Structures are given as C-alpha cells and as structure tokens.
Amino acid sequence: MQTAKRTHGFTESVIRAMTRVATQHDAINLAQGFPNFPAPDVLKEAAARAVRDDINQYAITWGAKRFRHALAKKYGDWYGMAVDPETEITVTCGATEAMASALLAIVDPGDEVIVFEPFYENYGPDAILCDARPVFVPMPFDGELDLERLAAAFSARTRAIIVCTPNNPAGRVLSRAELEGIADLCRRHDAYAVTDEIYEHIYYEGRHIPIATLDGMRDRTITISGASKTFSVTGWRIGTIVAPAGVTDAIRKVHDFLTVGAPAPLQEAVAVAMETLDRDYYEGLARDYRRRRDILCDGLRAAGFAITPPQGAYYVLADFSELSDLPDTEFGIWLTKEIGVAPVPGSSFYSKPEHGRRLIRFAFCKTEAMLLEAGERLGRVRSAA
Image (cartoon, rainbow, N blue to C red; front, side, top):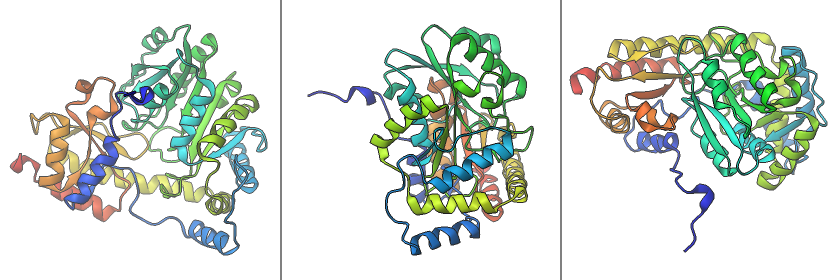
C-alpha cells in the first residue's frame, strides 16, 4: 500500500489537540490563540448587512474589489507602501492558507526554506509540502539575532526565509537592524522574504516595520496578514497577501485551486472595518492586550514559572523547570487535567523536540476576568506538583 509521501512524518496539530483536551476537562483554554470576547460592532453589523444584501456568491477568486482597495489604502496610510489592488493583492482563507499558497507558488522541490525557531507549527510542514527542506535557525527570546549564524544557513538552494514579527510563540519583535540584516541576505542570495505579519497591530515594544519597505525588498517580499487577530475573528478565515505582480499571478493560481476564494460577505465586512476604524482602535487594541499580558505574566511569575514578557503578539513561552521534572507534553496534560489551565507543549515549536521540553506556551487573548481566574488556578501548581 502506498503512503502519502508529502505528509509522511506529520503529526496532528498539537495546538488544536490541546483545545480538545481542554474541552474534555472543562479547563481554561490558553492553548489555542482565539479570543473569547466579541469582535467590534462595526464588523458584525457589516457582516449581517452583507448577508441581508445577498452578497452570498463567489467573490472574485483573488478577493472582493472593495476589500482589495481598502487594504491597498491601509498599506499606503500605515507604511507608505504603494500597492496595486488589481495586481498585487490576493485574499485567502486565512493567513494559514496564505502561507501555503505563497510557498507553493515560489518554492520548487529541492529548494531550502529558512525558518526561525521557535516557530508557529505550520511553517515546517508548509515547506515540506513543497518538497523543500526547512532549515532552522534559533531566534533568541531576548538579545540580538545572530546574523552570522543566519548567514551560514543560507546556501545556493535557499529560496525563501519565513519571517514572523511579532513572533509566535515567543513574542519577539525584530528590530530594524535585524530586519536590515535579513534583507541584506535575501538580496545577496536572491531569496524571498515571506513574512507573517498577522500580529502587526499587537505591539508592546518597538513598532511594526514591514520588511517590504526596506531598500530593494519590495520586489522580493511576500507580505502575509489577515483579519483574525486585529479584529478578533479567527473563525472568519480572511487572510491577505501583498506581493509583486509576477509573484501574485503565481500565488493566485495556487490559491484558486486550493480554496477558490474566501467568504464573500465577510470580505465586505472587513473592508467596512478598514474604511471605518481609525488609529484609536488599533492603539486601543495594543493597550488592551498589554493589560492582558501583564495579568498573565504576573500570574505565571507568582506560580513559579520563568518567563520573558513578550514584546508583541499574545503568547507567553514559560519555563516550568522549577516546578516539575515532567517533559512538556506530560506537564501540559497534567496542567490541563489537574489545574484546569490548558497550555501548548513547547516541543511543538522546535525542530528538535528536546529544545522545548522545559517550555509551555500560554495565549492571553482572553478577557481579563478569565486571565485572573487562570492565575488563581496556576497558583496551585506548587502544592499539587
């Protein structure tokens, strides 16, 4: 019997598996990164109106015109990027599909794709689905990126580097100097930067710098983002890709055969939100998440975890070495069943599981009340371990 070679060795998503365990044991789910609070009213009302107006059939495969134009205007207003909404934007079924479509469009069998670790668990499999080889390079939780080590990872086979800033799961924000170093390597090796910028508005330190805005990078950057995190609608599956016209043409072909198109009424709703919400909304989003971050970090420290507060995104990687000798997977299951708080085992974010055996990840995209309750429950870890 033949095996499915492209998925050989894959395991199921650990993040979504932990959500199931949390549900089974009625635990607070700080594993999967979905908010438990409502989306902005303007978004919900626009979605309902779009459905009532019978915007129910296929949008243009690469995205509804109104949404693409709203997105192009946003990139111009926020980042000074001139984006052609007709030839340089593709709307996808979430940023996850966006990453897969982008890599399938540019990566050939035998190519190499550089991935920083710890990494969001889809990146390695995305490269493997292209019959490429992921090459992993450490990203420190704090301190500067080792650009010499990164340079050594590039080779004649390097086709792309995946850049996620703010980073999931570590919350690292890459500085301009680090981005310039990555850009220089891309230029030297004729490689693409494929950037996951889904957390572009959730910042506590620094500011968001799209690598596409750096000298010589506009034509070799594929910028991925979406509505999920910015508008708290992870279930809507609205992702976006901004790329040079030639690359966009290839991406659209892959996207067409993968999913045809993203939900039409929800594209209209996100367009309305982009047209309506001003900078106060985005600044408030970051302020609200800073409070949630601080609540969870305080609770984790009090419970005995060692942490580095994230600079962006909404996750905390915590070291539990002082609390238990269990490996991360067993400790995560124990924490879920016995303490009532579900994390993600740290090994799922590393190419070699042993590098994450003393780590677990918590998501703080929850109400402050839920995070306070989680902190109280975690306070029982020392006595129960």
